[in-house]
Image (cartoon, rainbow, N blue to C red; front, side, top):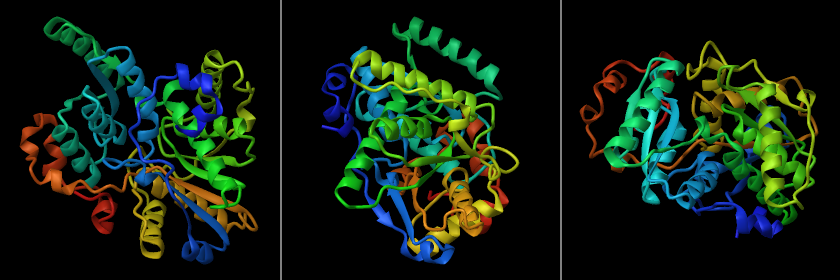
Length: 372
């Protein structure tokens, strides 16, 4: 049984849950990078191997989200994101595993190798793919697809919030904090002073913050914004924190209740770049550095920017004598063998341009945007 449910048996009775991942994920000390940047106690939480089929942070969220879909007899689920959405491909992979259909409602983004890979893998897993230019059109398209599925198939697909960032999804990272505490207690790492994590739709960081408080850990979450501020901001984080806390308390009154305010949130904004999914020089330098010094693969959209923020703090001597943990939310599972059987021309025509046009310059220079 996972740590959160062991700690709160009433949650085990009431929370919808389906096992998808391989937990606990390992912790590793980053000796070479730590020595290079002057952080003696630098650790990595390897959620990149959180699942046998697909790693990254989405596996933890989907264990509860798809658990709810199964409990409520859903037949299909919606996933929202941009064309290369890790959430959309993770949902496609794990929905197929548990017998659900996945429908991806996507928006355009700068091109990268990982966009191609994720689109092909989603198609390979039977996901239905749609692209719309902006959020209002995605909303309209979703209503159309709900009506279409209801009339044609007799059911309405269940909506998963963007990034899986809902009280249910964030619960996956409440549990992750309890998992981390067990690893601290067993001596795998000392209790971190700071935990750096990429901030997209906020569910990962918020779940960790709540879980750390509930587990009585003092670690401070440093959220590095990698998405537009309308999606990643302190107001949204405070709201999701209290919603998730109230949700868990409603299921088990013994779960502790907390109050936080905007001043309790630490967001680093300086590494986002010009727009979502547009790689930055600092981010790609961090990607290259992590690969060269530790053999760990990061990406240019999320984790590279988060590590760039960590390195910058180290260079400013902010992290001197601190115990620092970087939470790797990227997927490092290689599914290139599966993709060798898929032709991009099988995808809806609106996605062909990602295969026929060049990837963005920093992805071309590094070759680290993602395997295909």
